[in-house]
Image (cartoon, rainbow over all chains, first blue to last red; front, side):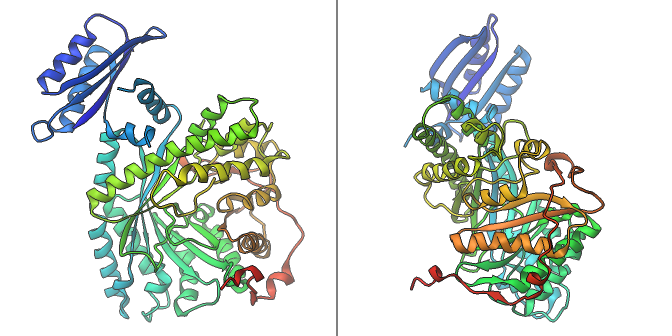
Length: 89
Length: 447
């Protein structure tokens, strides 16, 4: 299953490390990654892939949402197919 | 990874109110008919609760996984006037209570189909259903009803037009808010996912999933980027935006259909506003260049908008259906409310607008002393527009009992409020008293 993870918040040390560590623990492989500072705001997008038989989507989403709260950023996790459906013919 | 596209999509959902307005499961009740009303109601309850048992769960899971809000989970059923006709009971309130209980037990927002199709005449069940409407709507929370009074093929049933006026007044005398749950149509469609007018047509499959999308905010934002450009650019921008919005409906509908193991019916390409800021069709028209909706040019702007939405949406989904167009309900659109309050928008202008967009005079509050004949006359005018133009038209009118022009009726919460609008004092008394049927127009005979 492919997912898109977006992380938005105030920039500080360790956001990338915390998110990627959490993903590794969840057995989610990062297949693409982009990070920038927009208007002083830290914005990161990740594409992740995992086997739904091993890890449930809800578990990944919940873990990332909670991580976001603990480090003070907003983390959204969505399944990737939506973006293709909207943007591609 | 296309980060720009991901950002655009997230912005459409989070900032521009892109959502799935409704996922509506259509369920046929034709196999629930019984001469014993009690048995029929039990079958109806069993069938609805069985077919739709996972609807809310699946919709919530899709919302969580894909991040697209699905605002309403609804059910439409076969018009009850047909289902109940075989039973001897004089009142069909019991059927409405059954629908309400099924919807409540399932966690469904609204259930539609307490309906009668009388465009050409009445069968046994139709009068009984229409007479049951005031009590049925009063004694239920989630039930919606509709009456189809005319069609391009059949003409307009003027007896039914009069009866609708009487029923609307009767409902309003007890609780004006309940008028929100009743709509009268000309050319009603059988696969409409939107309320109050959704019912499951007899030509439909046993059970289907229909989607109603929305996205006035997305269109408005896209138009902000083409300020001052000619109409060719405006229409092109709306088409591209409507395409994206419709793709969401198609995508979510497909997944829901697979997970529920129910065939996917249609996507209704409608721009459905809500009272929330930035979710308004009126604001789109103003973005096109009107000081206020209602200004000269409004009808042309709306015609272009409606057409461009259809052109953009039609390629984005496998089957288009329902009402498909821009809705212009007054109380559910902050921009419309503002225009009425500022005396920039009248019922007469709204009537002209309904000739070029979907549906009709929707969620309009009129003074409490508006007569039955006036309400029926307004319906006859709308029905005539629908009949002649081969399109769906409707009225959902709320006589604000005890209130006059300039007052405001509040529906509470998400339903917004409506300023009481002026109606002509001139009476169509003898016109409405005639009854009978206005014949179908000449262009109805295409065979």
